[in-house]
Structure formats: structure tokens, C-alpha cells
Amino acid sequence: MHPDPSPADAGAVSVVVIGHDDAAHVADAVRSALGQGPAVREVVAVDDCSTDGSAELLERLAAAEPRLRVVRLPVNSGGCGTPRNTGLDAAAAPYVMFLDSDDVLPPGAVDALLAAARETDAQVTGGLCVRRELPSGREVPWEPALYASPAVVARPADRPRLVRDTLSVNKLYATDFLRAHGIRFPDGRFPYEDMVFTARVWAAAPRVALVPDRVYVWHVRRAAPRLSISLDRTGVGNWRARTHACRTAHAILLDAGEKGLARAVRAKFLDHDLRMYVRELPLRDDAYRRAWWAHTRAHLAEYDAADRSGDPAAPGVLLARVLLASPEPRDLPRLRELAARPSRLCPPYARTADGTPCWSAELPEVTLETLPERPVRLLPLAVDAELRARTRLLRLRLHELYGAVGRAGPLDAEVEWRHRDRAGLVLRRTVPLRPAADGAWTAAAPVPLERLASLGTGAWDLRLRLRFRDGATRAVSAHALTGPGLLRPRATPSPHHGLILVRPYATHGGALALRVAAGPQDARRILTGRLRRWLP
Image (cartoon, rainbow, N blue to C red; front, side, top):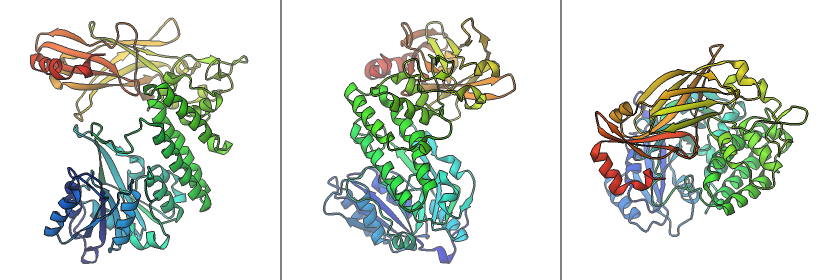
């Protein structure tokens, strides 16, 4: 909790809210900004030529709220940059922040940011953003390591990880700082405009304050009729736009003499952007994959050796090496597992003629010579999970990795079933890992279907924690096997529920998960309206 703002802080902040055809949500966004209290001098709502009544709704709100100003653009800009620039030009307070019409500011956000900005004389103050999945309400923090504790950074070059937080909306900016340096968003239709804006901010070398408070709630609506830019990745044009934004951010920082930050932008691209899109490649059609592959190879060819320095077996770097070594799409399921979080390097485990570990027999030039030397906490361990609903038994197989797993000495696995939409709902059981004849380690655990069904119907994710001889532990996910007889929905009798419906399935990342429903009522609901989610 933060104290009430001092009289000097009253009216210190302008909040710019932008929206287009979002009448269903824009009022909630505006109210969340007005509800921040006296520190907010004004909310500047910029309507990007909506046709759904959004502007009229905003005008009605403004008639009853003197702090709300509405600006209507006569022509739709096609992006987020122009309306944000319009709001920035209109802002009258010493500080400004941005809010999208489908998101909200949590209570106390402005006070937390403003207090830190005043205390540290920071031109930019950032706080924690959480991504809230709707309708479930499940929350995932964005770049939590940056905001784990209060910090003051004299200049961004002292904290290169800042480039990983490309959001513009979880930050409070000194208005005069933005104007003095001419820092604006790209105008018009420019997807991923935040990447360019934040690069311009860091290039101006501001003093930065970081606070652990939640200051922004990013609503993720995957079932919305119109997906946001960050979610609508089905067309290769989205990927081209993202690589263009990353390239532009890199050039901005390089031109400003911030070579370390420019290199950090490329490292972030390999570890975040590239991995995210590789995870989705198996879901796309052949035409997309070929266009994506060719474009990505051309983009990666711009990187110099220093951009790929460090550990050549790090997941993002290794993905780039495989892409550059192969003119055609290849090994997509294996690449998807490598791109997962946590990363998994699945078999086959090949070696070159001289015994050096490598990606595959077909790509011996992609060597993995540093991989066996890693500590177990850094190994891309591969665990396969096989579940047959009929037997209610989960079978696990931990693969060897060039001798590194055997040297670490696997002892047991903690099997955890975690409800996807109900935080804190977890079932755990520890089972021993036993060596197999082929050099792997195996374990078997009963699946507690009765308990899962009693605690909560819906999706349950499988998580594993492996324990090794020296006491080290490692959290991993389990790759879902998809052979004959696996991942089939099944109805099983239950002494408590009468009937339990269970469907094992592979998530988009390839990990094993379960959908569970219990009793006649759930069965009727599935049979009448939700078969597509349950049947293969």
C-alpha cells in the first residue's frame, strides 16, 4: 500500500486511453484510470474513428466527468501508434502513461509509479504487468525478474534486460522527457509499435525506476471475434511485421551508440520471439512454413557472430543454427520441443564421425560440444509421457543426453497435476525413477482421476520435478506421446461420480494435459455442445 499522494502530486498524471470499435470494454478502461484518484489530472480518450458507438459512449461519460477528454480521429489510423501520439500531444500533466481500451489499471497503479518517479527523479518508471487470461482469470506476470524488487537504474545500458520488456503501457513517463527527445510511436499501421517506442526511450538514456507493484492488467481474450495483434499470428505477415520491428529497434539503439542494448535486442529475439513462433510452426500449413522459414533465414543472416556468441546449445541460438544450416523446413516436432519452456532436446542424439555431439546425422555441422558439460539445471531434459485412460496409469521416460543425465544420477520424479483455471489447485505424488535397458530412466504413477474429478472439472496440466543424486532438482514438462491407443477420450465408471470423462491431449507446446469431466450433467453438456474439444 502507498500513502495518499501529496498535494504536489495531485493532477500530476495524464492517462492516454486509445481504442477502436471497443464499446464493450472502453468504459471499464476509462473508469480504471479515473479511479486512480487525484494524482490523475486527466484521462485523454482517443477514439480511432470507431463505428460501433464507442465515441458516443465516451462523450456521455465525459459529460459527467470533467477529468475525461475525448479526442476523435476523423480517419482510422490502422494501428495503435497514431492515437497514442495524438494523446501524447494533448497531454497536459507532467507525467503520462498509456492504456489500451481492452485493459485496465489496477487500483494504486498510478500512485505507486508516481511515488517512485518523484523519489528517484526518474524520467521513466516501470512496474509489473500481468497477463490475465479471460474468461478464466488466470494471471501470468510479464518479465517478473525485472520487477522483483525496487531498483533505480542510472541508464538503461546498466540493465540490458530492460530491452526484454517491450511494453509501453506498464510505465510512467516524464512528459517533457518524451517531448525533448522527440520520442513517439510509429504512425499508421505498424504492428508491434511498442518495440520501436521502447527502443527510442532506452536510446535516450533516461534514469529508470522499477517497482514490484502491479501497475497494468493486460487482458488476453483468445476467443474474441477480433484477435489482438499479439494473438493473431496465423499469417506470415505478422511474423514479417515482428521481425521488422525487432530490426528497427536494433537499428535505433545502434545509431544511438548503445551497442550493448542493441545486442540485447537480438538476444531477446532469439530467446523469446523466435522460440514463440517455432512452437507454433507444426500448427501451420506447408505454404506458411516455407515462407516463414525463408524469411527467418534471411533475417538471421543479418546477425554477426557476436550476436550468436555464448552457449551454442542455448535454445534460441541452437534454433537459429539449425535454421541457417537447412534451406528447407525440417525436424519441426523436435524444434518445437527445443523451443518450449522449459526447453527439451528430444531424440535422436547423433554424433559426428569423431564423436562430437551434434543436432542430427543430416546436420553434423550443428555441433553440441558444450552440452554434456552443463550442470543438470541447464540441460534441455526430455521426458516422454504416455497415458492410457483405460488403465489410469501415467508412464514416464527420461532420456539420456550424451551421458550427462547418467552422471547426474536421477532418483525420483514428483508428478504434479495443476488445474489450469483455478490457481493453487494441485495434486502431487513422488515416484522413483528406475534405469531401463536402453539407457533411459522410467517411472509409473497412477492418475488420480477420482480426486481430479472431485476437485475440479476442466483442464489439468502435468508438471514434473526431477531429483538427482546430489540433491539438485529440476522442473520439466512432459512430451505427450501420440501413438495408437494414446490420447483417446474415454468414459470410465466411478463409484463416486457414476461416470468420469477423461481426454488426454497434447498442448500447443506438445506437453501432456488432461480434460476431466464427471457425472451425468457434465456428460450431457459435452455431448450436446462441446464434442469438438473432446473428440480427436
